[in-house]
Image (cartoon, rainbow, N blue to C red; front, side):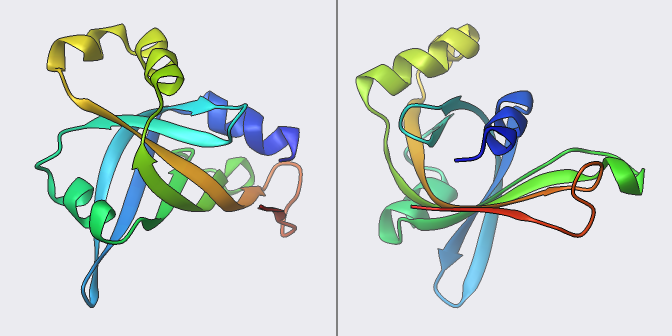
Length: 134
């Protein structure tokens, strides 16, 4: 994966997870951290939530991470196709290092293994996009 994509993913902390719900889409916002070694986004949630139940049914999910700005040449973001699964013990450790308060919630930790990513950075790339494929 291009280092510019990794740097952007590291710089943010909130993603939008999009999951399939029969013929519709359901979205949820999740705080995340990045497992650079395994190219996975790690987040916490509870098993009973709709986005987790739907992700178990169809583990192919979409993700969006975007910088919040109104200035067109500062627009940055990444669109991702990923595979949902439970996080490994090492990934749980990575998550709790970034969000130690999450241990109090006793939520489950999940991972999104990145299969494809398209990165936009209007400051350096303008209309050109960087893509990553597994």
